[in-house]
Length: 601
Image (cartoon, rainbow, N blue to C red; front, side, top):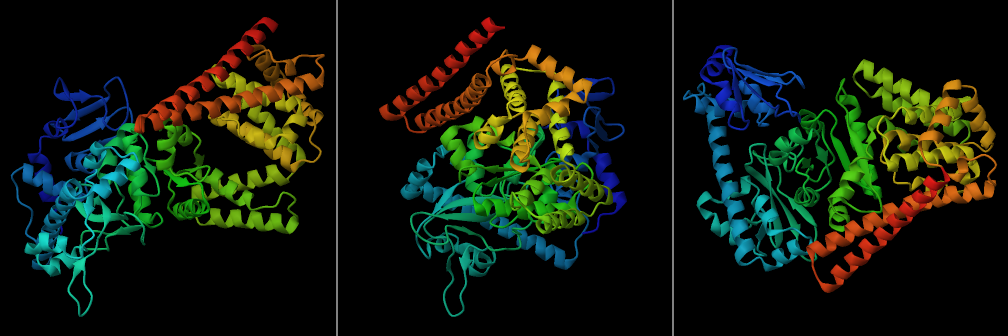
Protein backbone atom coordinates (compact mmCIF):
# COMPACT_ATOMS: atom_id res chain seq x y z
CA UNK A 1 0.00 0.00 0.00
CA UNK A 2 1.33 3.46 -0.96
CA UNK A 3 0.69 6.32 1.46
CA UNK A 4 1.14 9.83 0.10
CA UNK A 5 3.07 12.50 2.06
CA UNK A 6 -0.11 14.58 2.09
CA UNK A 7 -2.04 11.78 3.80
CA UNK A 8 0.67 11.29 6.44
CA UNK A 9 0.86 15.05 7.11
CA UNK A 10 -2.93 15.14 7.60
CA UNK A 11 -2.67 12.20 10.01
CA UNK A 12 0.01 13.98 12.07
CA UNK A 13 -2.05 17.17 12.14
CA UNK A 14 -5.10 15.31 13.47
CA UNK A 15 -3.12 13.53 16.20
CA UNK A 16 -2.49 15.31 19.50
CA UNK A 17 0.96 14.03 20.32
CA UNK A 18 0.82 14.77 24.06
CA UNK A 19 -2.43 12.81 24.39
CA UNK A 20 -0.86 9.87 22.55
CA UNK A 21 2.29 9.91 24.68
CA UNK A 22 0.31 10.38 27.91
CA UNK A 23 -1.28 6.95 27.42
CA UNK A 24 1.96 5.37 28.64
CA UNK A 25 4.02 8.24 30.10
CA UNK A 26 3.08 10.59 32.94
CA UNK A 27 3.47 14.08 31.45
CA UNK A 28 3.70 17.43 33.27
CA UNK A 29 2.71 20.66 31.55
CA UNK A 30 5.46 23.25 31.35
CA UNK A 31 4.37 26.37 29.48
CA UNK A 32 3.29 25.37 25.98
CA UNK A 33 5.03 22.02 26.23
CA UNK A 34 4.96 18.84 28.32
CA UNK A 35 7.87 17.16 30.06
CA UNK A 36 8.56 13.77 31.66
CA UNK A 37 11.30 11.34 32.54
CA UNK A 38 12.33 9.77 29.25
CA UNK A 39 10.69 6.40 28.41
CA UNK A 40 13.67 5.48 26.23
CA UNK A 41 16.30 5.54 28.97
CA UNK A 42 16.48 5.58 32.77
CA UNK A 43 16.71 9.00 34.40
CA UNK A 44 15.56 10.82 37.55
CA UNK A 45 15.32 14.37 36.21
CA UNK A 46 12.93 14.98 33.26
CA UNK A 47 14.70 15.65 29.98
CA UNK A 48 11.96 14.38 27.64
CA UNK A 49 9.78 17.11 26.05
CA UNK A 50 6.64 16.94 23.91
CA UNK A 51 5.62 19.89 21.71
CA UNK A 52 2.10 19.68 20.25
CA UNK A 53 2.52 22.81 18.11
CA UNK A 54 5.54 21.37 16.31
CA UNK A 55 4.26 17.79 16.50
CA UNK A 56 7.42 16.16 17.82
CA UNK A 57 9.02 14.82 21.00
CA UNK A 58 12.68 15.11 21.94
CA UNK A 59 14.88 13.84 24.77
CA UNK A 60 17.89 15.98 25.63
CA UNK A 61 19.39 13.06 27.53
CA UNK A 62 19.51 10.23 24.99
CA UNK A 63 18.56 12.05 21.78
CA UNK A 64 15.29 10.18 21.12
CA UNK A 65 13.28 12.24 18.64
CA UNK A 66 10.23 11.75 16.46
CA UNK A 67 6.59 12.38 15.61
CA UNK A 68 3.41 10.43 16.36
CA UNK A 69 4.21 7.67 13.86
CA UNK A 70 7.76 7.35 15.14
CA UNK A 71 6.39 7.11 18.70
CA UNK A 72 4.25 4.15 17.70
CA UNK A 73 7.10 2.33 15.94
CA UNK A 74 9.84 3.06 18.52
CA UNK A 75 7.95 3.08 21.82
CA UNK A 76 5.24 0.56 20.94
CA UNK A 77 7.39 -1.48 18.56
CA UNK A 78 4.73 -1.58 15.82
CA UNK A 79 5.55 -2.02 12.14
CA UNK A 80 5.08 1.23 10.20
CA UNK A 81 1.82 0.28 8.47
CA UNK A 82 0.29 -1.02 11.73
CA UNK A 83 1.26 2.22 13.49
CA UNK A 84 -0.43 4.25 10.76
CA UNK A 85 -3.58 2.13 10.87
CA UNK A 86 -3.91 2.56 14.64
CA UNK A 87 -3.43 6.33 14.42
CA UNK A 88 -5.87 6.54 11.51
CA UNK A 89 -8.56 4.74 13.53
CA UNK A 90 -7.97 7.00 16.56
CA UNK A 91 -8.17 10.13 14.38
CA UNK A 92 -11.45 9.05 12.75
CA UNK A 93 -9.85 8.89 9.30
CA UNK A 94 -9.90 6.10 6.73
CA UNK A 95 -6.98 4.38 5.10
CA UNK A 96 -6.55 4.99 1.37
CA UNK A 97 -8.42 2.45 -0.75
CA UNK A 98 -6.53 -0.77 -1.41
CA UNK A 99 -6.36 -2.54 -4.71
CA UNK A 100 -8.49 -5.67 -4.96
CA UNK A 101 -5.60 -8.07 -4.37
CA UNK A 102 -4.39 -6.22 -1.25
CA UNK A 103 -7.94 -6.06 0.09
CA UNK A 104 -8.38 -9.81 -0.29
CA UNK A 105 -5.04 -10.46 1.43
CA UNK A 106 -5.98 -8.19 4.34
CA UNK A 107 -9.35 -9.89 4.76
CA UNK A 108 -7.71 -13.33 4.72
CA UNK A 109 -5.15 -12.24 7.33
CA UNK A 110 -7.93 -10.91 9.54
CA UNK A 111 -9.66 -14.29 9.42
CA UNK A 112 -6.41 -16.11 10.21
CA UNK A 113 -5.74 -13.86 13.21
CA UNK A 114 -9.20 -14.65 14.58
CA UNK A 115 -8.63 -18.36 14.00
CA UNK A 116 -5.29 -18.32 15.84
CA UNK A 117 -6.81 -16.41 18.76
CA UNK A 118 -9.58 -19.00 19.02
CA UNK A 119 -7.04 -21.84 18.83
CA UNK A 120 -5.02 -20.34 21.67
CA UNK A 121 -8.12 -19.95 23.80
CA UNK A 122 -9.04 -23.57 23.13
CA UNK A 123 -5.56 -24.80 24.13
CA UNK A 124 -5.69 -22.74 27.35
CA UNK A 125 -9.08 -24.26 28.23
CA UNK A 126 -7.74 -27.77 27.63
CA UNK A 127 -4.84 -27.08 30.01
CA UNK A 128 -7.40 -26.35 32.71
CA UNK A 129 -9.89 -29.17 32.17
CA UNK A 130 -7.91 -32.12 30.81
CA UNK A 131 -4.27 -31.09 30.86
CA UNK A 132 -3.12 -32.68 34.09
CA UNK A 133 0.00 -34.08 32.44
CA UNK A 134 0.83 -30.61 31.07
CA UNK A 135 0.23 -28.92 34.43
CA UNK A 136 2.53 -31.47 36.07
CA UNK A 137 5.21 -30.76 33.46
CA UNK A 138 4.98 -27.01 34.13
CA UNK A 139 5.19 -27.55 37.88
CA UNK A 140 8.20 -29.83 37.45
CA UNK A 141 10.00 -27.09 35.53
CA UNK A 142 9.11 -24.55 38.22
CA UNK A 143 6.74 -22.56 35.96
CA UNK A 144 4.11 -20.91 38.14
CA UNK A 145 0.41 -20.78 37.08
CA UNK A 146 0.51 -16.98 36.76
CA UNK A 147 3.53 -17.23 34.47
CA UNK A 148 1.71 -19.79 32.32
CA UNK A 149 -1.25 -17.40 32.06
CA UNK A 150 0.99 -14.47 31.14
CA UNK A 151 2.48 -16.42 28.23
CA UNK A 152 -0.85 -18.01 27.24
CA UNK A 153 0.47 -21.56 27.65
CA UNK A 154 -2.03 -24.31 26.86
CA UNK A 155 -2.35 -28.02 26.12
CA UNK A 156 -3.06 -29.95 22.91
CA UNK A 157 -4.77 -33.29 23.71
CA UNK A 158 -3.33 -36.41 22.11
CA UNK A 159 -6.05 -36.54 19.47
CA UNK A 160 -6.10 -36.26 15.69
CA UNK A 161 -9.38 -34.41 15.51
CA UNK A 162 -10.37 -32.51 18.67
CA UNK A 163 -9.05 -29.11 17.54
CA UNK A 164 -10.43 -29.66 14.05
CA UNK A 165 -13.88 -30.29 15.51
CA UNK A 166 -13.67 -27.32 17.89
CA UNK A 167 -12.76 -24.88 15.07
CA UNK A 168 -14.87 -26.52 12.36
CA UNK A 169 -16.64 -23.25 11.56
CA UNK A 170 -13.46 -21.94 9.90
CA UNK A 171 -13.38 -24.85 7.44
CA UNK A 172 -10.53 -27.24 6.68
CA UNK A 173 -8.85 -25.06 4.00
CA UNK A 174 -8.31 -22.15 6.42
CA UNK A 175 -7.24 -24.48 9.24
CA UNK A 176 -4.65 -26.01 6.91
CA UNK A 177 -3.49 -22.57 5.74
CA UNK A 178 -3.03 -21.48 9.37
CA UNK A 179 -0.85 -24.53 10.05
CA UNK A 180 -3.22 -25.97 12.65
CA UNK A 181 -4.10 -28.99 10.48
CA UNK A 182 -1.88 -31.23 8.37
CA UNK A 183 -3.18 -32.08 4.93
CA UNK A 184 -1.98 -35.28 3.25
CA UNK A 185 -3.14 -36.17 -0.24
CA UNK A 186 -5.87 -38.78 -0.17
CA UNK A 187 -6.52 -38.43 3.57
CA UNK A 188 -8.62 -36.23 5.82
CA UNK A 189 -6.74 -33.28 7.37
CA UNK A 190 -5.83 -33.88 11.02
CA UNK A 191 -4.53 -31.92 14.02
CA UNK A 192 -0.87 -30.95 13.75
CA UNK A 193 -0.26 -30.61 17.50
CA UNK A 194 -1.07 -33.65 19.62
CA UNK A 195 -0.05 -34.46 23.19
CA UNK A 196 2.00 -31.28 23.54
CA UNK A 197 2.46 -28.29 25.82
CA UNK A 198 1.37 -25.39 23.61
CA UNK A 199 3.21 -22.06 23.64
CA UNK A 200 1.72 -19.26 21.50
CA UNK A 201 4.12 -17.25 19.34
CA UNK A 202 3.01 -13.63 19.07
CA UNK A 203 3.84 -10.74 16.78
CA UNK A 204 4.92 -7.28 17.94
CA UNK A 205 1.28 -6.33 18.54
CA UNK A 206 0.68 -9.33 20.80
CA UNK A 207 -1.40 -11.28 18.27
CA UNK A 208 -0.90 -15.04 18.11
CA UNK A 209 0.58 -15.95 14.72
CA UNK A 210 1.94 -19.46 15.38
CA UNK A 211 2.55 -22.07 18.08
CA UNK A 212 5.44 -24.01 19.53
CA UNK A 213 4.57 -27.40 20.95
CA UNK A 214 6.77 -29.32 23.41
CA UNK A 215 6.26 -33.06 23.59
CA UNK A 216 4.98 -34.43 26.91
CA UNK A 217 6.72 -37.69 27.66
CA UNK A 218 8.70 -39.62 25.06
CA UNK A 219 8.53 -38.82 21.37
CA UNK A 220 10.09 -36.86 18.56
CA UNK A 221 10.49 -34.11 17.68
CA UNK A 222 10.93 -32.67 21.16
CA UNK A 223 9.80 -29.24 19.92
CA UNK A 224 7.45 -28.67 17.00
CA UNK A 225 6.75 -25.21 15.55
CA UNK A 226 4.00 -24.11 13.22
CA UNK A 227 4.98 -24.11 9.55
CA UNK A 228 5.39 -20.81 7.76
CA UNK A 229 2.03 -19.25 6.94
CA UNK A 230 0.72 -15.89 5.70
CA UNK A 231 1.01 -14.72 9.33
CA UNK A 232 4.24 -16.43 10.36
CA UNK A 233 7.76 -16.08 8.95
CA UNK A 234 10.07 -17.75 11.47
CA UNK A 235 13.15 -15.97 10.11
CA UNK A 236 11.60 -12.58 10.85
CA UNK A 237 9.90 -13.39 14.17
CA UNK A 238 11.35 -13.35 17.67
CA UNK A 239 9.60 -15.14 20.49
CA UNK A 240 8.37 -12.74 23.24
CA UNK A 241 8.92 -9.66 21.04
CA UNK A 242 5.59 -8.23 22.21
CA UNK A 243 6.59 -8.22 25.89
CA UNK A 244 10.31 -7.58 25.46
CA UNK A 245 10.12 -4.32 23.50
CA UNK A 246 9.02 -2.06 26.35
CA UNK A 247 11.15 -4.01 28.87
CA UNK A 248 14.24 -3.62 26.69
CA UNK A 249 13.79 0.14 26.53
CA UNK A 250 13.49 0.29 30.33
CA UNK A 251 16.44 -2.04 30.96
CA UNK A 252 18.43 -0.46 28.11
CA UNK A 253 19.41 -3.90 26.86
CA UNK A 254 17.92 -6.91 25.12
CA UNK A 255 19.02 -10.51 25.63
CA UNK A 256 18.54 -13.26 23.04
CA UNK A 257 18.57 -16.87 24.26
CA UNK A 258 18.19 -20.14 22.38
CA UNK A 259 14.72 -21.40 23.32
CA UNK A 260 11.31 -20.21 24.41
CA UNK A 261 11.39 -22.21 27.66
CA UNK A 262 14.52 -20.22 28.56
CA UNK A 263 12.60 -16.99 27.85
CA UNK A 264 9.73 -18.06 30.10
CA UNK A 265 12.02 -19.12 32.97
CA UNK A 266 13.98 -15.86 32.76
CA UNK A 267 10.80 -13.77 32.65
CA UNK A 268 9.60 -15.51 35.80
CA UNK A 269 12.97 -14.62 37.39
CA UNK A 270 12.48 -10.94 36.51
CA UNK A 271 14.19 -10.68 33.10
CA UNK A 272 11.45 -9.43 30.77
CA UNK A 273 13.85 -8.07 28.12
CA UNK A 274 14.54 -11.54 26.69
CA UNK A 275 13.66 -12.97 23.26
CA UNK A 276 14.52 -16.12 21.29
CA UNK A 277 14.68 -17.19 17.65
CA UNK A 278 12.37 -20.00 16.65
CA UNK A 279 14.32 -23.17 16.05
CA UNK A 280 16.82 -21.60 13.66
CA UNK A 281 20.06 -19.67 13.88
CA UNK A 282 19.63 -15.91 14.21
CA UNK A 283 18.87 -14.40 10.81
CA UNK A 284 19.80 -11.00 9.41
CA UNK A 285 16.20 -9.85 9.86
CA UNK A 286 16.19 -10.92 13.51
CA UNK A 287 19.50 -9.14 14.17
CA UNK A 288 18.09 -5.97 12.61
CA UNK A 289 15.07 -6.29 14.90
CA UNK A 290 17.32 -6.68 17.94
CA UNK A 291 19.27 -3.57 16.96
CA UNK A 292 16.03 -1.61 16.91
CA UNK A 293 15.65 -2.53 20.58
CA UNK A 294 19.25 -1.99 21.77
CA UNK A 295 22.54 -0.89 20.26
CA UNK A 296 24.42 -3.94 21.52
CA UNK A 297 22.11 -6.97 22.00
CA UNK A 298 23.45 -9.67 24.32
CA UNK A 299 23.36 -13.14 22.76
CA UNK A 300 23.32 -15.88 25.40
CA UNK A 301 24.17 -19.43 24.35
CA UNK A 302 24.41 -22.77 26.09
CA UNK A 303 27.97 -23.79 26.87
CA UNK A 304 27.82 -27.17 25.11
CA UNK A 305 29.28 -27.85 21.66
CA UNK A 306 26.01 -27.01 19.91
CA UNK A 307 25.74 -23.72 21.81
CA UNK A 308 29.32 -22.71 20.96
CA UNK A 309 28.66 -23.54 17.31
CA UNK A 310 25.48 -21.44 17.35
CA UNK A 311 27.35 -18.54 18.98
CA UNK A 312 30.07 -18.67 16.34
CA UNK A 313 27.46 -18.77 13.56
CA UNK A 314 25.63 -15.76 15.02
CA UNK A 315 28.90 -13.83 15.36
CA UNK A 316 29.84 -14.43 11.74
CA UNK A 317 26.33 -13.52 10.58
CA UNK A 318 26.51 -10.21 12.45
CA UNK A 319 29.87 -9.11 11.01
CA UNK A 320 28.65 -7.97 7.55
CA UNK A 321 25.79 -6.03 9.17
CA UNK A 322 27.83 -3.98 11.67
CA UNK A 323 27.43 -0.21 11.56
CA UNK A 324 28.94 2.46 13.84
CA UNK A 325 27.39 2.09 17.28
CA UNK A 326 25.70 -1.24 16.48
CA UNK A 327 27.34 -4.49 17.56
CA UNK A 328 26.59 -7.60 19.63
CA UNK A 329 27.95 -9.06 22.86
CA UNK A 330 28.14 -12.79 23.54
CA UNK A 331 28.01 -14.86 26.70
CA UNK A 332 28.07 -18.65 27.07
CA UNK A 333 26.78 -20.59 30.07
CA UNK A 334 29.35 -22.98 31.57
CA UNK A 335 28.91 -26.53 32.80
CA UNK A 336 26.50 -27.65 30.10
CA UNK A 337 23.65 -25.57 31.57
CA UNK A 338 21.06 -23.42 29.82
CA UNK A 339 19.42 -20.25 31.24
CA UNK A 340 16.42 -22.23 32.46
CA UNK A 341 18.70 -24.60 34.42
CA UNK A 342 20.77 -21.73 35.81
CA UNK A 343 17.95 -19.61 37.24
CA UNK A 344 16.16 -22.66 38.63
CA UNK A 345 19.32 -23.94 40.30
CA UNK A 346 21.02 -20.73 41.42
CA UNK A 347 18.53 -17.88 41.11
CA UNK A 348 18.29 -14.62 39.19
CA UNK A 349 21.53 -13.12 40.52
CA UNK A 350 23.54 -15.97 39.02
CA UNK A 351 22.20 -15.06 35.57
CA UNK A 352 22.86 -11.35 36.17
CA UNK A 353 26.42 -12.20 37.18
CA UNK A 354 26.79 -14.28 34.02
CA UNK A 355 25.56 -11.43 31.80
CA UNK A 356 28.18 -9.18 33.41
CA UNK A 357 30.90 -11.43 31.93
CA UNK A 358 29.75 -10.96 28.31
CA UNK A 359 32.41 -10.51 25.65
CA UNK A 360 32.53 -8.02 22.83
CA UNK A 361 32.18 -9.46 19.33
CA UNK A 362 35.88 -8.97 18.53
CA UNK A 363 37.02 -10.54 21.83
CA UNK A 364 34.72 -13.53 21.28
CA UNK A 365 36.02 -14.18 17.77
CA UNK A 366 39.63 -13.83 18.93
CA UNK A 367 39.04 -16.30 21.76
CA UNK A 368 37.31 -18.82 19.47
CA UNK A 369 40.18 -18.77 17.00
CA UNK A 370 42.82 -18.84 19.73
CA UNK A 371 41.17 -21.88 21.33
CA UNK A 372 41.73 -23.85 18.15
CA UNK A 373 45.45 -23.01 18.07
CA UNK A 374 47.89 -25.47 19.71
CA UNK A 375 49.94 -24.04 22.56
CA UNK A 376 53.15 -24.86 20.68
CA UNK A 377 51.87 -23.62 17.31
CA UNK A 378 54.50 -23.38 14.59
CA UNK A 379 54.84 -20.77 11.81
CA UNK A 380 52.40 -22.50 9.46
CA UNK A 381 49.69 -22.78 12.11
CA UNK A 382 50.20 -19.19 13.22
CA UNK A 383 49.94 -18.03 9.61
CA UNK A 384 46.66 -19.93 9.17
CA UNK A 385 45.40 -18.40 12.42
CA UNK A 386 46.26 -14.89 11.22
CA UNK A 387 44.67 -15.58 7.82
CA UNK A 388 41.37 -16.67 9.43
CA UNK A 389 41.25 -13.52 11.56
CA UNK A 390 41.80 -11.43 8.45
CA UNK A 391 39.04 -13.35 6.65
CA UNK A 392 36.59 -12.62 9.46
CA UNK A 393 37.44 -8.92 9.49
CA UNK A 394 37.15 -8.82 5.71
CA UNK A 395 33.47 -9.84 5.84
CA UNK A 396 32.52 -6.57 7.57
CA UNK A 397 30.65 -4.29 5.19
CA UNK A 398 31.36 -0.93 6.81
CA UNK A 399 34.81 0.32 5.78
CA UNK A 400 35.68 2.06 9.04
CA UNK A 401 34.64 -0.85 11.25
CA UNK A 402 36.39 -3.32 8.94
CA UNK A 403 39.61 -1.30 9.26
CA UNK A 404 39.35 -1.22 13.07
CA UNK A 405 38.80 -4.99 13.28
CA UNK A 406 41.84 -5.57 11.06
CA UNK A 407 43.86 -3.31 13.36
CA UNK A 408 42.55 -4.92 16.57
CA UNK A 409 43.26 -8.48 15.39
CA UNK A 410 46.68 -7.41 14.14
CA UNK A 411 47.54 -5.85 17.50
CA UNK A 412 46.38 -8.93 19.39
CA UNK A 413 48.33 -11.22 17.07
CA UNK A 414 51.47 -9.15 17.46
CA UNK A 415 51.02 -9.01 21.24
CA UNK A 416 50.88 -12.80 21.35
CA UNK A 417 53.46 -13.75 18.76
CA UNK A 418 55.42 -10.58 18.10
CA UNK A 419 58.20 -9.04 20.13
CA UNK A 420 58.30 -10.69 23.54
CA UNK A 421 58.43 -7.45 25.51
CA UNK A 422 55.17 -6.29 23.85
CA UNK A 423 53.17 -8.99 25.66
CA UNK A 424 54.77 -8.00 28.94
CA UNK A 425 53.94 -4.38 28.28
CA UNK A 426 50.25 -5.24 27.79
CA UNK A 427 50.14 -6.79 31.28
CA UNK A 428 51.84 -3.70 32.71
CA UNK A 429 49.23 -1.52 31.02
CA UNK A 430 46.50 -3.70 32.54
CA UNK A 431 47.95 -2.91 35.94
CA UNK A 432 47.89 0.80 35.11
CA UNK A 433 44.25 0.61 33.95
CA UNK A 434 43.23 -1.08 37.21
CA UNK A 435 44.79 1.78 39.15
CA UNK A 436 42.53 4.28 37.34
CA UNK A 437 39.34 2.70 38.73
CA UNK A 438 37.76 5.32 41.00
CA UNK A 439 35.41 3.28 43.19
CA UNK A 440 37.33 0.48 44.88
CA UNK A 441 35.34 -1.84 47.13
CA UNK A 442 36.63 -4.73 49.23
CA UNK A 443 36.12 -7.32 46.47
CA UNK A 444 38.02 -5.17 43.96
CA UNK A 445 40.85 -4.64 46.46
CA UNK A 446 41.13 -8.39 47.16
CA UNK A 447 41.20 -9.23 43.47
CA UNK A 448 43.66 -6.50 42.55
CA UNK A 449 45.85 -7.65 45.42
CA UNK A 450 45.88 -11.17 44.00
CA UNK A 451 46.86 -9.97 40.52
CA UNK A 452 49.64 -7.79 41.91
CA UNK A 453 50.80 -10.78 43.93
CA UNK A 454 50.86 -13.00 40.84
CA UNK A 455 53.12 -10.49 39.09
CA UNK A 456 55.59 -10.79 41.96
CA UNK A 457 55.29 -14.57 42.49
CA UNK A 458 55.18 -16.02 39.01
CA UNK A 459 55.63 -19.58 40.29
CA UNK A 460 52.06 -19.46 41.64
CA UNK A 461 50.82 -18.14 38.29
CA UNK A 462 52.52 -20.80 36.18
CA UNK A 463 51.53 -23.73 38.44
CA UNK A 464 47.91 -22.80 39.14
CA UNK A 465 46.49 -21.36 35.89
CA UNK A 466 43.28 -23.41 36.11
CA UNK A 467 42.55 -22.23 39.65
CA UNK A 468 43.34 -18.61 38.76
CA UNK A 469 40.98 -18.86 35.77
CA UNK A 470 38.17 -19.71 38.24
CA UNK A 471 38.55 -16.44 40.13
CA UNK A 472 35.06 -14.84 40.07
CA UNK A 473 36.19 -11.54 38.58
CA UNK A 474 33.31 -9.42 37.26
CA UNK A 475 35.17 -6.14 36.72
CA UNK A 476 36.26 -6.07 33.07
CA UNK A 477 39.57 -4.31 33.72
CA UNK A 478 40.68 -6.86 36.30
CA UNK A 479 39.38 -9.76 34.20
CA UNK A 480 41.47 -8.69 31.19
CA UNK A 481 44.52 -8.33 33.43
CA UNK A 482 43.96 -11.86 34.81
CA UNK A 483 43.44 -13.32 31.31
CA UNK A 484 46.60 -11.67 29.95
CA UNK A 485 48.60 -13.01 32.87
CA UNK A 486 47.33 -16.53 32.12
CA UNK A 487 48.26 -16.08 28.45
CA UNK A 488 51.77 -15.12 29.50
CA UNK A 489 52.04 -18.18 31.72
CA UNK A 490 50.96 -20.44 28.85
CA UNK A 491 52.95 -18.92 25.99
CA UNK A 492 56.14 -17.67 27.70
CA UNK A 493 58.48 -20.45 28.78
CA UNK A 494 60.95 -17.86 30.14
CA UNK A 495 58.43 -16.04 32.34
CA UNK A 496 59.86 -15.05 35.72
CA UNK A 497 59.52 -12.33 38.34
CA UNK A 498 62.40 -10.34 36.90
CA UNK A 499 60.77 -10.06 33.47
CA UNK A 500 57.62 -8.52 34.94
CA UNK A 501 59.53 -6.41 37.43
CA UNK A 502 61.82 -5.06 34.70
CA UNK A 503 58.82 -4.19 32.52
CA UNK A 504 57.30 -2.17 35.35
CA UNK A 505 60.60 -0.60 36.36
CA UNK A 506 61.20 1.05 32.97
CA UNK A 507 58.16 3.29 33.52
CA UNK A 508 58.22 5.61 36.55
CA UNK A 509 54.41 5.90 36.46
CA UNK A 510 54.03 2.11 36.76
CA UNK A 511 56.43 2.05 39.69
CA UNK A 512 54.30 4.69 41.42
CA UNK A 513 51.14 2.74 40.65
CA UNK A 514 52.57 -0.44 42.14
CA UNK A 515 53.62 1.46 45.27
CA UNK A 516 50.22 3.22 45.56
CA UNK A 517 48.28 -0.04 45.16
CA UNK A 518 50.29 -1.62 47.98
CA UNK A 519 49.55 1.34 50.22
CA UNK A 520 45.81 1.51 49.51
CA UNK A 521 44.89 -2.16 49.16
CA UNK A 522 45.49 -4.86 51.77
CA UNK A 523 48.65 -5.61 53.74
CA UNK A 524 49.31 -9.11 52.44
CA UNK A 525 52.56 -10.88 53.23
CA UNK A 526 53.41 -11.35 49.57
CA UNK A 527 53.96 -7.59 49.30
CA UNK A 528 56.30 -7.27 52.26
CA UNK A 529 60.05 -7.12 51.91
CA UNK A 530 62.11 -9.80 53.60
CA UNK A 531 59.29 -12.35 53.77
CA UNK A 532 60.17 -15.96 53.01
CA UNK A 533 58.99 -16.57 49.39
CA UNK A 534 57.44 -19.88 50.44
CA UNK A 535 55.32 -18.09 53.08
CA UNK A 536 54.31 -15.36 50.63
CA UNK A 537 53.31 -17.88 47.96
CA UNK A 538 51.32 -19.91 50.50
CA UNK A 539 49.40 -16.80 51.54
CA UNK A 540 48.79 -15.85 47.90
CA UNK A 541 47.32 -19.27 47.18
CA UNK A 542 45.26 -18.97 50.34
CA UNK A 543 43.67 -15.73 49.06
CA UNK A 544 42.92 -17.30 45.68
CA UNK A 545 41.36 -20.39 47.26
CA UNK A 546 39.17 -18.39 49.62
CA UNK A 547 37.89 -16.12 46.84
CA UNK A 548 36.97 -19.13 44.70
CA UNK A 549 35.46 -20.88 47.72
CA UNK A 550 33.38 -17.84 48.72
CA UNK A 551 31.98 -17.57 45.20
CA UNK A 552 31.14 -21.30 45.11
CA UNK A 553 29.45 -21.23 48.53
CA UNK A 554 27.46 -18.13 47.55
CA UNK A 555 26.19 -19.86 44.41
CA UNK A 556 25.40 -22.99 46.41
CA UNK A 557 23.34 -20.92 48.87
CA UNK A 558 21.41 -19.30 46.00
CA UNK A 559 20.75 -22.70 44.43
CA UNK A 560 19.51 -24.17 47.72
CA UNK A 561 17.26 -21.16 48.29
CA UNK A 562 15.71 -21.55 44.83
CA UNK A 563 15.10 -25.27 45.39
CA UNK A 564 13.47 -24.56 48.73
CA UNK A 565 11.34 -21.79 47.24
CA UNK A 566 10.13 -24.04 44.40
CA UNK A 567 9.54 -27.11 46.59
CA UNK A 568 9.50 -26.41 50.33
CA UNK A 569 10.06 -29.62 52.28
CA UNK A 570 11.97 -30.46 55.43
CA UNK A 571 14.83 -31.74 53.26
CA UNK A 572 15.09 -28.68 51.00
CA UNK A 573 14.78 -26.32 53.98
CA UNK A 574 17.52 -28.17 55.83
CA UNK A 575 19.72 -28.06 52.73
CA UNK A 576 19.14 -24.31 52.47
CA UNK A 577 20.02 -23.76 56.13
CA UNK A 578 23.23 -25.79 55.70
CA UNK A 579 24.19 -23.86 52.57
CA UNK A 580 23.62 -20.55 54.40
CA UNK A 581 25.75 -21.77 57.28
CA UNK A 582 28.56 -22.87 54.94
CA UNK A 583 28.55 -19.51 53.16
CA UNK A 584 28.52 -17.60 56.45
CA UNK A 585 31.47 -19.66 57.67
CA UNK A 586 33.54 -18.71 54.63
CA UNK A 587 32.63 -15.04 55.07
CA UNK A 588 33.60 -15.25 58.75
CA UNK A 589 37.02 -16.59 57.77
CA UNK A 590 37.48 -13.66 55.42
CA UNK A 591 36.53 -11.17 58.15
CA UNK A 592 38.94 -12.82 60.61
CA UNK A 593 41.71 -12.62 58.06
CA UNK A 594 40.97 -8.95 57.40
CA UNK A 595 41.27 -8.26 61.14
CA UNK A 596 44.69 -9.94 61.04
CA UNK A 597 45.70 -7.77 58.07
CA UNK A 598 44.56 -4.60 59.85
CA UNK A 599 46.71 -5.50 62.83
CA UNK A 600 49.67 -6.29 60.56
CA UNK A 601 49.27 -2.96 58.77
